[in-house]
Image 1: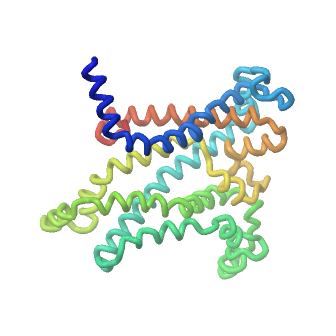
Image 2: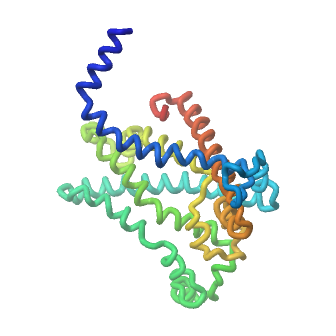
Image 3: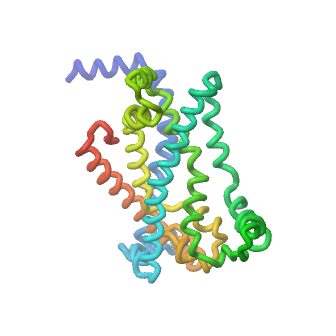
Amino acid sequence: MPKQKNRTLTKMRRYWSLYLMLVPGILYLIVNNYLPLFGLTIAFKKVNYAVGILNSEWCGLKNFSFLFSTKEAFLMFRNTIGYNLAFIFIGNAFGLLIAITMDTVKNRFFKNVSQIIILFPYLLSIVIVTYIVFSFLSPSSGFMNQTILRFFGMEPVSWYNNPKPWPVILVIVYIWMSFGYTSILYYSTLIGIDKSLYEAAAMDGAGSWQQIKNVTIPCMRKIIIIMFILAIGKICYSDFGLFYQVPMHSGMLQNVTQTIDTYVYTALLEQNNISRSAAAGFLQSMLGFVLVLITNKIVNRFDSESAMF
């Protein structure tokens, strides 16, 4: 033990400057990630602003019950999980398709072009989505009513009062918002694949589709699985802007746009109960954590090399 202790002290003296560089990062981690954990107590209290959080009355799990006691409980959980499942499969598939397409086009026609080309889909996807959607769907001046439907001789549609097309609209808008980031992640992995594998496949007579199927997809299996696991961890969350701002918070669309986040926000505005809001966030985090562990365990059982841990 004394020898091991002396070795540790020797290393600390030798690398003291590196340890000193860690201090700001550690302090940032503590202040921004660990101190806020104290706020979790709000989820188990009936907060009284007059006496403060510490002196407020404990109420156990009562704050969690409001998510399940309402008539809209099934609706918001169905929408949250259902949309996220669609986003996971369709969004990742589209991002992977864009990444493969960019790499194929670049290798065939733009071999000397800088890798800055990968920023194009990201920049394209971060355009202000809410205003673009409204410019398309506005009942009076929208592109769909005034141009597309008029061209085919169809009657204008009151999009913000008609819930039927909105599941498709929301999926399309989400893909538009996210495919840039997703495709960049996949593309950064794709360009690291050994090109000799493609050359060997081409020498064996493999075409473009066969190279993608037998070289690209197997080499990207790990990043695809990791992206899937991380997405599962957020399956109980929803993009607030997508489900609240894009549909303009229309009451007629509530059956297809109500999610856990929008419900909690509305309840917070009406009741000003931060305890219930904190309880909802805590529940979402715990469900996400458990789902990540379960999904990773399943992946670890069948393909340990592709699991996160």
